[in-house]
Image 1 (cartoon, rainbow, N blue to C red):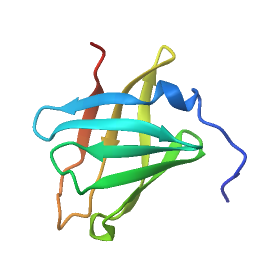
Image 2 (image 1 turned 60 degrees about the vertical axis):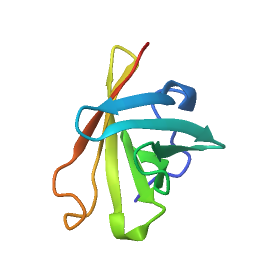
Image 3 (image 1 turned 90 degrees about the horizontal axis):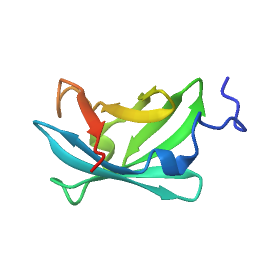
Image 4 (image 1 turned 180 degrees about the horizontal axis):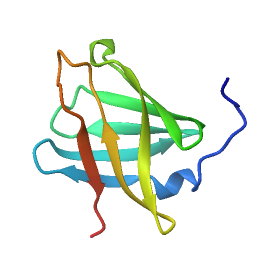
Length: 104
């Protein structure tokens, strides 16, 4: 059972920003009320919603249901977001992508 009143380890603003993967390219995370939105720069029609569940886990829901719905986690080290690993349905993409948060 998930506890709905749980909050992530950091404020939502700490998760927002640009992330990069060498193969996939760039994504941008923005805050919308009490959740996050992933914008896939190389696929303008694709986005995903991240809603916090508990124990550091987020529910990732793509706007295109063929990509799937998954539990994901951010890598947080020293109180800072380092990366996010995303997944897609295996028939879309078999391997997960690790997006490193860009600090420029």
